[in-house]
Each structure stands twice: as C-alpha cells, then as structure tokens.
Image (tube, helix red, strand yellow):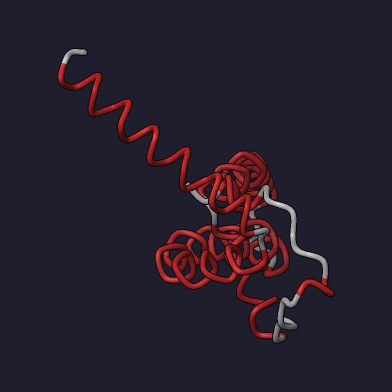
Length: 127
C-alpha cells in the first residue's frame, strides 16, 4: 500500500519544504529495507547462499566462524529485523514520505483510493 507513495516525485527544495533531519533519512532508509518486497528479495537472494553454506559446512566437517556468520547468521538477522520492524517503521516513514511529495499527487492518490472504494461498494451491491 506504500508503493504509490514511494513512486511520487519529491518536491524541489525551494518550494517551502523544510529540510529533512538526518534521523528522518535513516528512518526512510530502514523502512525501505523492511518492506514486504525487500523481504521477498532477501529470501530469494539468501536462501541459496545459506543452503550452499550448510552443504560446505557438512562437506568440510568443520564449522568456520566466518562462514556461519556471513552466510547464515547475518542473512537470518536481516530477515528477522525486516519482519519485526516493518509494522513499527511503516507508520512513521509513511508520514515522512507523504510530506516529501507534491500535494497534487497526494490528492490524486486519495481521489483514486476513494473511487476504488466506491467501485468496490457498487460491485458488492451487485450494480
């Protein structure tokens, strides 16, 4: 549901927009790392890497610390962070992302949302 907000163009700095604080930039960055799309990409990228790391560990009979951390612990930690922090970061980042956008584009999104709701209501009533 945040995809449409992420695709909006930011306002030029001379248009009255206040400067972003460094924390706001970090918050938006972290939010983008926790989206469901990013979690799917993490799974697609890291699963084969983890499987091959496990095969390597079994084949070698040793458990090198570097292989365990880089190929198993870090990917699992990133996925766990993304899964747990998305509900926390999403509301805070959404407000920041909307503030960065052109007011006409935001109004257009709200208009589309309202029209979609009316269409679904009409479809639910059978006409």
